[in-house]
Image (cartoon, rainbow over all chains, first blue to last red; front, side, top):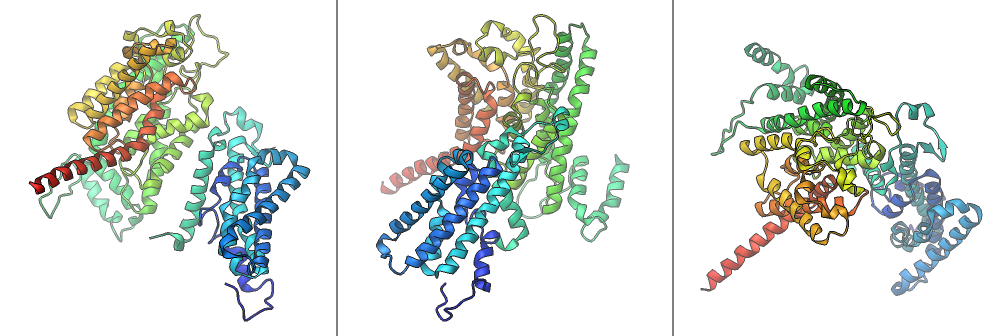
Length: 217
Length: 388
């Protein structure tokens, strides 16, 4: 919540750092809040699109948080979702155009999922839960934190799916040809979406067995 | 036997609480109850404890699988020698098959039991017996050419994600043996489909005797080569290429009768699976739009893994429906979907695996509605009575 007594809070105060690093682990948008699963299944076949997607979502979350936080006292409550969507949609279009201009092949691979960032629950969730009630700078930091928290999981999933599914990391073959000659085969199921879901499940499993406080009674 | 009992009693304190190996308690328990009938008795209430525990139930299923296994071994040898054009006798066939099949059996048991024991130790549970049957079923549904490391990966996957994450034996929603096969089917399709994987040492380029193709009846049917499908009697005896344990319907029927006589397997499921398969085939026969649809019901049921699935997979007491009405519905739908997938989707020649896995997911739902409707019916009766 906004701290009204201290107007000149340093950018890297304890509270802001907590906003930044909380989503990395104990408040992760994917594994704890279970948001943004849809895109986590769709864009994680290879690492490159996953990294680009993570960056895009981080940028959109951070800047939409910042803008909405600036506007938060002037937005009428009854139409706030519309205002938020306009801001998010604008940012997504900018990101989409930049991707098309500079990394066209990745943009092709991500296809509709860049546009679908608009509907990513993480962004709307952070706007509603944080930016509407907090000052611009903490909101911006919170947006970056959640974007990175989402990105970490995306990259972990993509790493395993690309490594086991096509024997590559970032498009480079890492499994020596002698393995294939000995009878090793890439696991075709890792490329299919069900294995992405199971990989997320394993990440949640590992995380919860490390932090017992996360286990619901 | 007595010496063994004495030895176990002597080392038992070391595995009990406070003993030297108390962490390996469940491992010890597993071996002890495997060797001797446990002496557990009920102290309170009027509960009768049958001496047939889970371990003995599972052992009977394993015994019922032995005919299919032995026939499978013989058939592996037989198909191999036929493909290279050598004449053989029964012993030679059996020995050759034994050498090729046993590694798969051992690998499947070692992998699965290792995973089970690790989980039991971590969770401080008793080691469950469920894997005794699964470990035997896995080799029987594999092609003989399967690389052993794939068996390891698939078995570990099926046991961890099909069973342990749900809480171990008795909690799983999917049949672990079928999950193993499904994993290989989707992850490494090249080793479990096609014509050359079913006969040992056969590759697409290897030299074989003229006229030997290695194609299974299912592959023939899917490519509309109906005249190449062996006659019903050959299908019944099972002297054909296929997964190790599913070819001989004779061996499967021997297993089925053991299961039915001892009352281990559920006759309702077995019966209704076959009825469902016959019914669906008859519906296709009416349409008869392509040669596959015109195949007679008897041939359809004798082809591929239909019988094996009906007897050993669909009747799995954990993943099947529990209510009697539910078991009929569950079985019927398995039979119908198996034929439906086979005939309409050539990409999945063996529909039995997918249809059983699909119905595994629906079994609790079927049970739920059967119970709900029963409650409703009885409630209706109750209100009428109260009015009168």
